[in-house]
Amino acid sequence: MALIGNLIKKGIALNSMFTGGTKTPARLQREVLKKLISEAQDTAFGIYYGFSELLEREDLITGFKQRVPIHDYDEMHRQWWNQQHQYPDITWPGKPAFFALSSGTTGKASKRIPITEAFLQSMRDVGISLIRSLPNYDFPEELFESEVLMLSSSANLAKSDEGHLKGEISGINVRNFPGWYDFFYRPGKEIARIDNWDDRVEAIARKAPEWNIGAIAGIPSWVLLMIRKVMEVHGLDTIHDIWPNLTVYASGGVAFETYRKDFEEISARPLVIMDTYLASEGFFAYTARPGPLDMRLAIEHGYFYEFIPFDERGVDERGKILEEPVSLHIDEVVTGQDYVLVISTCAGAWRYVIGDTIRFTSLDPPEILITGRTKFFLNVVGSQLSEEKLDAAILDVSGQMGIKVNEYAVAAIRNEENAYIHQWVIVTDKPGVDEGLCAEKLDAALQEANKNYKVARKKALKGVQVLAISKEMYHNYLEENRKKGGQVKTLKVMKSEKMEEYLKFIRG
Image: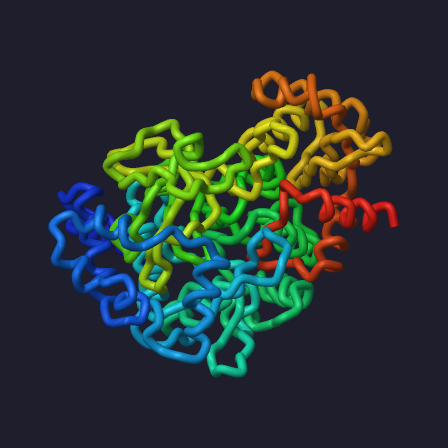
């Protein structure tokens, strides 16, 4: 028996028993909001919106919603965050030492999200809560003596003219890991600072035999590339040939299901899959029990949440938030309803629309699934397709055709007759895919699953086309657009102009 691992496992279980609370989610969230407002009352934002007076109100949440408007990134950055590059005490006490360049999916210039020390601590606190949930799983003792490989973006941060450091959030997190993380964190800060993705993966592959990896964390597409590189360099049949204690894969950033078969192929035995909701704006949720990939919402770690119904109460027909949307507190939500997530955080984000839609699968404890992005809502001709519906159709059709599709992109574009069609690009390593048959099956699956799409196909949407490309071409496209590696996520729903650029690259 792994004695040290057994002691650690029992210690985590004991700690978990003594840290359970009895406060309701609503009470915990009210306490979080009160603490956030109290901390920020003397900032420029707090003074402008009268935070000191808000703290004296009996109904703090209602007053907060009435007084502070909902912000998207452009509004928050233009009016407030832009000033924090030079001046302290704008939306949070002090001056941020870091700004996260959101890897995002919008395709425009990177967003710059302020990262405060309180915010970094909130991320570590959520990570500790995740660790406290491990006794819910029947993990072997050996796992608790192994190391964790976190595949991040480069930790070699750039210094701005104003003096702060900037980079992607995963690199900032690695940069700020406490010294004791070195006992279990791999690939280590030296390799994590390598800027070039291919060079970083090559260095990981060379060092792989020296490590006892029990868990891996990162975006699925890039983790698979890294694992396959390790297997190629060392001539392995499965990744367990070199890391026999590998037990857990912590996914995040994108929906996992389109990658499940790939992970099964590179493993000698099933991995325990855990999902995480970790963005540039916060570490919001994590899988806390075996079974489905539902995630426990982090409700006491410095994030206050609001939920805008993703229907006529909150958004228009294109998925854009209304001028005065309904905004619900955590004790007002229901399961089965999609919501646009709105956050206020200890990084100085206030009523900030992060751009994700979520759905509650449980209210006690509060557990969620990410159902898509508001920008991944394809409705140019009334088709009303969410990312969740698109993912389900891809899984269905790829299963029928015996192919694997991890990544895809779709857009409404005009054909030669100036009529709207849905143009799909699917990424698969299987040559000779019948693109016409794939288009027919995707069309049929979406018509069956979505009545609005079915109506659109009878009216303005005149056809569906599919173009299948290799993973090599897909990665070449990402490299061409400087979106290769680490925590980079790519567009699933594209604007027509972006799709035309994509098609031009493929055909060129």
